[in-house]
Length: 172
Image (cartoon, rainbow, N blue to C red; front, side, top):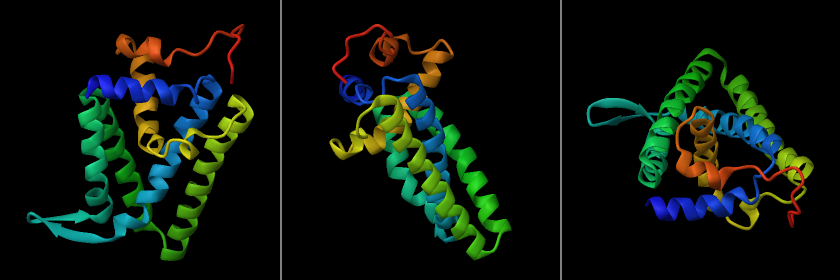
């Protein structure tokens, strides 16, 4: 799926050229993922002899999709997801149900706000999600690709994800 992924990423990046918007997406995606899975970690189901949270069960198809798009980036997202699942599970187990729902609401609201601010203030346009709903699934791949590039890996994606020069005559 490498060619497909790169084409999807090229469209996605047109809405995410400003590095400050990218930073807002890192924060927003981490907050949204943690908030979204938090209540689901409280529901436990038996699966193949193991007690597994509904959060993990529902995330598995998306994690598999990311692995199919790009194995290395998918593994990176899987590793981060494990940490975020652990954080969400720990928080949900340590607080009251009302507090957990308040944390859920705050994380989701802050995550959405970070992304909305990133687009409105730094990109000067609406989020790509409204035009391309599939971009909801590309955000984590974009963020992980940026991290891999910053660490000196994935030079094949660097040209696709490069920010526009400051003197660019972009049509944004």
